[in-house]
Amino acid sequence: MKKNAILLVSVSVLVLLVFPMHVVDASAISPPDMPGPFHVGFFKVWYSVPPYGRYWATIRYPALHDGWRAAKDVSDAPYPGIVVANGFAGSEWNIKWIPKHLASHGYVTICFTPPQKISGDTTQWASGFHGGVEILKKENNRLFSPLYGILDGETFGAVGLSMGGGGCIEATGALGSAIDAAVALAPAGSASVISASGNITVPVQLQVGSNDGMVPPAHVLSFYTEFIPNTTVKEYLVITGGNHVGFIDDFFARFADKLGLDNPPGISFDEQRRVSSKYFTSWFNYHLKHLSEYYTYIFGDEAQNDFDSGVLSDLRYTIP
Image (cartoon, rainbow, N blue to C red; front, top):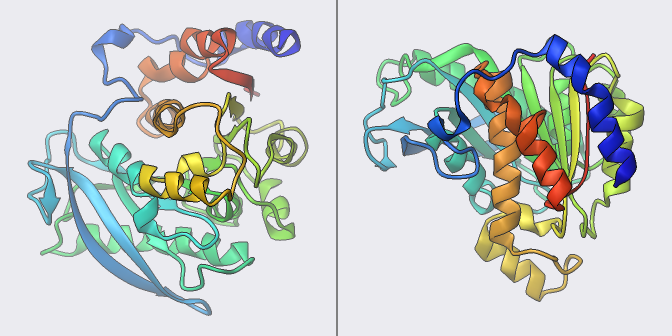
Protein backbone atom coordinates (compact mmCIF):
# COMPACT_ATOMS: atom_id res chain seq x y z
CA MET A 1 0.00 0.00 0.00
CA LYS A 2 2.80 2.45 0.88
CA LYS A 3 4.57 1.74 -2.40
CA ASN A 4 1.45 2.64 -4.40
CA ALA A 5 0.86 5.77 -2.35
CA ILE A 6 4.43 6.88 -3.09
CA LEU A 7 3.79 6.26 -6.80
CA LEU A 8 0.73 8.50 -6.72
CA VAL A 9 2.62 11.30 -5.02
CA SER A 10 5.65 10.97 -7.28
CA VAL A 11 3.67 11.56 -10.45
CA SER A 12 1.38 14.26 -9.08
CA VAL A 13 3.54 17.16 -10.25
CA LEU A 14 3.76 15.68 -13.75
CA VAL A 15 -0.01 15.19 -13.82
CA LEU A 16 -0.61 18.85 -13.11
CA LEU A 17 1.72 19.84 -15.93
CA VAL A 18 0.07 17.57 -18.49
CA PHE A 19 -3.62 17.63 -17.53
CA PRO A 20 -5.71 20.73 -16.88
CA MET A 21 -7.03 21.22 -13.37
CA HIS A 22 -10.76 20.77 -12.99
CA VAL A 23 -12.45 24.14 -12.73
CA VAL A 24 -15.97 23.12 -11.70
CA ASP A 25 -16.92 21.92 -8.22
CA ALA A 26 -17.50 18.16 -8.41
CA SER A 27 -20.76 18.63 -6.49
CA ALA A 28 -22.11 20.60 -9.47
CA ILE A 29 -21.68 17.75 -11.96
CA SER A 30 -23.40 14.41 -12.42
CA PRO A 31 -21.86 11.95 -9.93
CA PRO A 32 -20.29 9.24 -12.11
CA ASP A 33 -21.35 6.40 -9.79
CA MET A 34 -25.04 7.39 -9.90
CA PRO A 35 -27.50 7.30 -12.84
CA GLY A 36 -27.03 10.31 -15.09
CA PRO A 37 -29.57 13.00 -15.98
CA PHE A 38 -30.87 11.41 -19.20
CA HIS A 39 -33.72 8.98 -19.78
CA VAL A 40 -32.75 5.97 -21.86
CA GLY A 41 -34.35 4.81 -25.10
CA PHE A 42 -33.44 1.53 -26.78
CA PHE A 43 -33.96 -0.67 -29.82
CA LYS A 44 -32.59 -3.95 -31.17
CA VAL A 45 -30.28 -4.45 -34.15
CA TRP A 46 -28.06 -7.09 -35.64
CA TYR A 47 -25.00 -6.97 -37.86
CA SER A 48 -22.73 -9.46 -39.55
CA VAL A 49 -18.94 -9.60 -39.46
CA PRO A 50 -17.21 -12.26 -41.59
CA PRO A 51 -16.16 -14.92 -40.88
CA TYR A 52 -17.97 -15.03 -37.54
CA GLY A 53 -21.55 -14.32 -38.52
CA ARG A 54 -24.41 -12.44 -36.88
CA TYR A 55 -24.04 -10.27 -33.78
CA TRP A 56 -27.26 -9.41 -31.92
CA ALA A 57 -27.19 -6.10 -30.08
CA THR A 58 -29.17 -3.45 -28.23
CA ILE A 59 -28.62 0.24 -28.88
CA ARG A 60 -29.36 2.71 -26.08
CA TYR A 61 -29.38 6.50 -26.30
CA PRO A 62 -30.37 9.64 -24.37
CA ALA A 63 -34.14 10.05 -24.68
CA LEU A 64 -37.05 12.19 -23.51
CA HIS A 65 -38.49 9.23 -21.62
CA ASP A 66 -37.47 5.64 -20.93
CA GLY A 67 -38.53 2.94 -23.34
CA TRP A 68 -38.44 1.24 -26.71
CA ARG A 69 -37.66 3.67 -29.56
CA ALA A 70 -38.34 6.61 -27.23
CA ALA A 71 -37.98 10.08 -28.70
CA LYS A 72 -34.35 11.16 -28.64
CA ASP A 73 -33.10 13.92 -26.37
CA VAL A 74 -31.08 16.36 -28.47
CA SER A 75 -30.29 18.76 -25.62
CA ASP A 76 -26.61 17.81 -25.42
CA ALA A 77 -26.10 16.18 -28.82
CA PRO A 78 -23.97 15.06 -30.52
CA TYR A 79 -23.17 12.18 -28.16
CA PRO A 80 -20.06 9.97 -28.32
CA GLY A 81 -20.64 6.29 -29.05
CA ILE A 82 -19.51 3.42 -26.81
CA VAL A 83 -19.48 -0.28 -27.70
CA VAL A 84 -19.96 -2.73 -24.82
CA ALA A 85 -19.42 -6.50 -24.58
CA ASN A 86 -19.78 -9.26 -22.02
CA GLY A 87 -17.47 -12.26 -21.73
CA PHE A 88 -17.32 -16.03 -22.26
CA ALA A 89 -20.78 -17.67 -22.34
CA GLY A 90 -22.36 -14.28 -21.63
CA SER A 91 -24.93 -12.25 -23.53
CA GLU A 92 -25.59 -8.57 -23.89
CA TRP A 93 -28.71 -8.84 -21.76
CA ASN A 94 -26.81 -9.93 -18.64
CA ILE A 95 -24.47 -6.95 -18.63
CA LYS A 96 -27.01 -4.31 -19.59
CA TRP A 97 -26.35 -2.21 -16.49
CA ILE A 98 -23.21 -0.81 -18.14
CA PRO A 99 -24.72 0.52 -21.39
CA LYS A 100 -27.80 1.78 -19.51
CA HIS A 101 -25.61 3.67 -17.06
CA LEU A 102 -23.50 5.21 -19.82
CA ALA A 103 -26.54 6.17 -21.91
CA SER A 104 -27.97 7.97 -18.86
CA HIS A 105 -24.76 10.02 -18.79
CA GLY A 106 -25.08 11.14 -22.40
CA TYR A 107 -23.63 8.40 -24.59
CA VAL A 108 -25.04 6.34 -27.43
CA THR A 109 -24.20 2.72 -26.59
CA ILE A 110 -24.39 -0.58 -28.39
CA CYS A 111 -24.00 -3.82 -26.43
CA PHE A 112 -23.55 -7.00 -28.47
CA THR A 113 -23.67 -10.77 -28.12
CA PRO A 114 -21.11 -12.58 -30.32
CA PRO A 115 -22.23 -15.40 -32.63
CA GLN A 116 -20.28 -18.00 -30.64
CA LYS A 117 -20.59 -17.21 -26.96
CA ILE A 118 -18.60 -20.28 -25.93
CA SER A 119 -15.39 -19.54 -27.76
CA GLY A 120 -11.80 -18.79 -26.85
CA ASP A 121 -11.26 -16.59 -29.90
CA THR A 122 -10.89 -13.03 -28.64
CA THR A 123 -10.78 -11.78 -32.23
CA GLN A 124 -14.48 -12.65 -32.48
CA TRP A 125 -15.12 -10.09 -29.73
CA ALA A 126 -12.70 -7.59 -31.28
CA SER A 127 -14.61 -7.87 -34.56
CA GLY A 128 -17.82 -7.18 -32.66
CA PHE A 129 -16.38 -3.90 -31.38
CA HIS A 130 -15.38 -2.80 -34.87
CA GLY A 131 -18.78 -3.83 -36.25
CA GLY A 132 -20.55 -2.02 -33.42
CA VAL A 133 -18.87 1.25 -34.32
CA GLU A 134 -19.95 0.86 -37.94
CA ILE A 135 -23.58 0.04 -37.12
CA LEU A 136 -23.80 3.13 -34.89
CA LYS A 137 -22.58 5.25 -37.77
CA LYS A 138 -25.14 3.70 -40.11
CA GLU A 139 -28.00 4.24 -37.67
CA ASN A 140 -26.95 7.85 -37.19
CA ASN A 141 -27.34 8.40 -40.93
CA ARG A 142 -30.57 6.44 -41.34
CA LEU A 143 -33.50 8.86 -41.58
CA PHE A 144 -36.01 6.86 -39.54
CA SER A 145 -33.60 5.61 -36.92
CA PRO A 146 -34.12 6.81 -33.33
CA LEU A 147 -30.45 7.85 -33.47
CA TYR A 148 -30.69 9.96 -36.57
CA GLY A 149 -28.31 12.90 -36.29
CA ILE A 150 -27.44 12.66 -32.56
CA LEU A 151 -24.21 10.60 -32.67
CA ASP A 152 -20.76 12.14 -32.65
CA GLY A 153 -19.50 9.97 -35.47
CA GLU A 154 -15.86 10.83 -34.80
CA THR A 155 -15.68 9.87 -31.11
CA PHE A 156 -15.96 6.31 -29.79
CA GLY A 157 -15.19 4.34 -26.68
CA ALA A 158 -15.18 0.64 -25.84
CA VAL A 159 -15.70 -1.33 -22.63
CA GLY A 160 -15.64 -5.11 -22.25
CA LEU A 161 -15.56 -7.77 -19.54
CA SER A 162 -13.36 -10.88 -19.51
CA MET A 163 -13.30 -12.22 -23.10
CA GLY A 164 -15.03 -8.98 -24.02
CA GLY A 165 -12.28 -7.14 -22.15
CA GLY A 166 -9.65 -8.99 -24.15
CA GLY A 167 -11.55 -8.21 -27.34
CA CYS A 168 -11.76 -4.57 -26.26
CA ILE A 169 -7.97 -4.38 -25.92
CA GLU A 170 -7.47 -6.20 -29.22
CA ALA A 171 -9.90 -3.89 -31.04
CA THR A 172 -8.36 -0.77 -29.50
CA GLY A 173 -4.88 -1.78 -30.62
CA ALA A 174 -5.91 -2.79 -34.13
CA LEU A 175 -4.54 -0.88 -37.10
CA GLY A 176 -6.91 1.96 -38.01
CA SER A 177 -9.11 1.46 -34.92
CA ALA A 178 -11.82 4.08 -34.41
CA ILE A 179 -11.73 3.65 -30.62
CA ASP A 180 -10.58 6.79 -28.79
CA ALA A 181 -10.66 5.49 -25.20
CA ALA A 182 -11.15 2.03 -23.70
CA VAL A 183 -11.95 0.29 -20.43
CA ALA A 184 -11.14 -3.40 -19.97
CA LEU A 185 -12.78 -5.15 -17.00
CA ALA A 186 -10.80 -8.21 -15.88
CA PRO A 187 -9.63 -8.76 -19.47
CA ALA A 188 -8.81 -12.23 -20.76
CA GLY A 189 -5.45 -12.67 -22.40
CA SER A 190 -4.44 -14.36 -25.64
CA ALA A 191 -1.58 -14.00 -28.06
CA SER A 192 -3.62 -11.65 -30.24
CA VAL A 193 -4.68 -9.52 -27.26
CA ILE A 194 -1.12 -9.21 -25.95
CA SER A 195 0.17 -8.35 -29.42
CA ALA A 196 -2.49 -5.68 -29.97
CA SER A 197 -1.98 -4.15 -26.53
CA GLY A 198 1.50 -3.11 -27.58
CA ASN A 199 -0.03 -0.94 -30.32
CA ILE A 200 -2.46 1.00 -28.11
CA THR A 201 -1.95 4.76 -28.23
CA VAL A 202 -5.28 5.97 -26.78
CA PRO A 203 -6.19 6.12 -23.06
CA VAL A 204 -6.99 2.70 -21.58
CA GLN A 205 -8.22 1.82 -18.10
CA LEU A 206 -7.90 -1.64 -16.55
CA GLN A 207 -10.18 -2.76 -13.70
CA VAL A 208 -10.23 -5.98 -11.69
CA GLY A 209 -11.58 -7.17 -8.34
CA SER A 210 -9.17 -8.26 -5.62
CA ASN A 211 -11.18 -11.51 -5.15
CA ASP A 212 -11.47 -12.37 -8.85
CA GLY A 213 -11.16 -16.15 -9.18
CA MET A 214 -11.25 -16.23 -12.98
CA VAL A 215 -8.89 -13.43 -14.02
CA PRO A 216 -6.65 -12.65 -11.05
CA PRO A 217 -5.26 -9.13 -10.49
CA ALA A 218 -1.72 -10.27 -11.32
CA HIS A 219 -2.86 -11.21 -14.83
CA VAL A 220 -4.44 -7.80 -15.40
CA LEU A 221 -1.45 -5.99 -13.90
CA SER A 222 0.80 -7.51 -16.57
CA PHE A 223 -1.09 -5.55 -19.23
CA TYR A 224 -0.28 -2.38 -17.33
CA THR A 225 3.34 -3.14 -16.49
CA GLU A 226 4.48 -5.16 -19.51
CA PHE A 227 2.25 -4.98 -22.57
CA ILE A 228 0.63 -1.54 -22.96
CA PRO A 229 3.33 1.03 -23.82
CA ASN A 230 4.44 3.56 -21.23
CA THR A 231 3.90 6.21 -23.89
CA THR A 232 0.15 5.59 -23.55
CA VAL A 233 -2.13 7.10 -20.91
CA LYS A 234 -3.16 4.09 -18.83
CA GLU A 235 -4.64 3.26 -15.45
CA TYR A 236 -4.85 0.10 -13.37
CA LEU A 237 -7.15 -0.25 -10.38
CA VAL A 238 -8.17 -3.10 -8.09
CA ILE A 239 -11.60 -2.93 -6.43
CA THR A 240 -11.18 -4.23 -2.90
CA GLY A 241 -13.41 -7.27 -2.35
CA GLY A 242 -14.71 -7.36 -5.91
CA ASN A 243 -14.78 -10.57 -7.90
CA HIS A 244 -15.33 -11.50 -11.55
CA VAL A 245 -19.09 -12.03 -11.72
CA GLY A 246 -19.65 -8.81 -9.77
CA PHE A 247 -19.22 -6.91 -13.02
CA ILE A 248 -22.44 -8.36 -14.49
CA ASP A 249 -26.09 -7.61 -13.68
CA ASP A 250 -27.15 -8.35 -10.12
CA PHE A 251 -29.46 -11.32 -10.81
CA PHE A 252 -26.86 -13.16 -12.86
CA ALA A 253 -24.06 -12.31 -10.44
CA ARG A 254 -26.04 -13.78 -7.55
CA PHE A 255 -26.86 -16.89 -9.59
CA ALA A 256 -23.20 -17.41 -10.50
CA ASP A 257 -22.24 -16.89 -6.87
CA LYS A 258 -24.66 -19.60 -5.72
CA LEU A 259 -23.14 -21.99 -8.27
CA GLY A 260 -19.66 -21.27 -6.89
CA LEU A 261 -18.33 -20.14 -10.25
CA ASP A 262 -16.07 -17.51 -8.70
CA ASN A 263 -14.35 -16.65 -5.46
CA PRO A 264 -16.80 -15.22 -2.90
CA PRO A 265 -16.98 -11.42 -2.99
CA GLY A 266 -15.84 -9.30 -0.09
CA ILE A 267 -18.28 -6.49 -0.92
CA SER A 268 -21.83 -6.39 -2.27
CA PHE A 269 -22.36 -6.64 -6.01
CA ASP A 270 -24.06 -3.24 -5.86
CA GLU A 271 -20.94 -1.73 -4.32
CA GLN A 272 -18.68 -3.31 -6.94
CA ARG A 273 -20.79 -1.91 -9.75
CA ARG A 274 -20.87 1.50 -8.05
CA VAL A 275 -17.08 1.69 -7.80
CA SER A 276 -16.60 0.33 -11.31
CA SER A 277 -19.07 2.81 -12.82
CA LYS A 278 -17.43 5.69 -10.97
CA TYR A 279 -14.16 4.97 -12.73
CA PHE A 280 -15.30 3.98 -16.23
CA THR A 281 -17.83 6.85 -16.47
CA SER A 282 -15.21 9.37 -15.34
CA TRP A 283 -12.68 7.86 -17.76
CA PHE A 284 -15.00 8.38 -20.73
CA ASN A 285 -16.24 11.78 -19.55
CA TYR A 286 -12.66 12.98 -19.28
CA HIS A 287 -11.19 11.42 -22.40
CA LEU A 288 -14.16 11.42 -24.80
CA LYS A 289 -16.12 14.48 -23.70
CA HIS A 290 -13.03 16.33 -22.41
CA LEU A 291 -14.82 17.32 -19.20
CA SER A 292 -11.98 18.38 -16.92
CA GLU A 293 -14.31 18.21 -13.90
CA TYR A 294 -13.84 14.43 -13.89
CA TYR A 295 -10.08 14.64 -13.49
CA THR A 296 -10.43 14.28 -9.73
CA TYR A 297 -12.18 10.91 -10.05
CA ILE A 298 -9.41 9.22 -12.02
CA PHE A 299 -6.18 11.10 -11.30
CA GLY A 300 -6.93 13.47 -8.42
CA ASP A 301 -8.27 13.73 -4.89
CA GLU A 302 -11.29 11.44 -5.33
CA ALA A 303 -9.12 8.61 -6.66
CA GLN A 304 -6.54 9.18 -3.92
CA ASN A 305 -9.28 9.09 -1.27
CA ASP A 306 -10.57 5.76 -2.58
CA PHE A 307 -7.06 4.34 -2.39
CA ASP A 308 -6.33 5.75 1.06
CA SER A 309 -9.66 4.52 2.47
CA GLY A 310 -9.25 1.00 1.03
CA VAL A 311 -12.04 1.15 -1.57
CA LEU A 312 -9.22 0.41 -4.01
CA SER A 313 -6.43 -1.93 -2.97
CA ASP A 314 -4.21 -0.86 -5.87
CA LEU A 315 -4.19 2.23 -8.05
CA ARG A 316 -1.57 3.05 -10.65
CA TYR A 317 -1.52 5.31 -13.65
CA THR A 318 0.93 6.44 -16.28
CA ILE A 319 0.74 9.85 -17.89
CA PRO A 320 3.54 10.26 -20.43
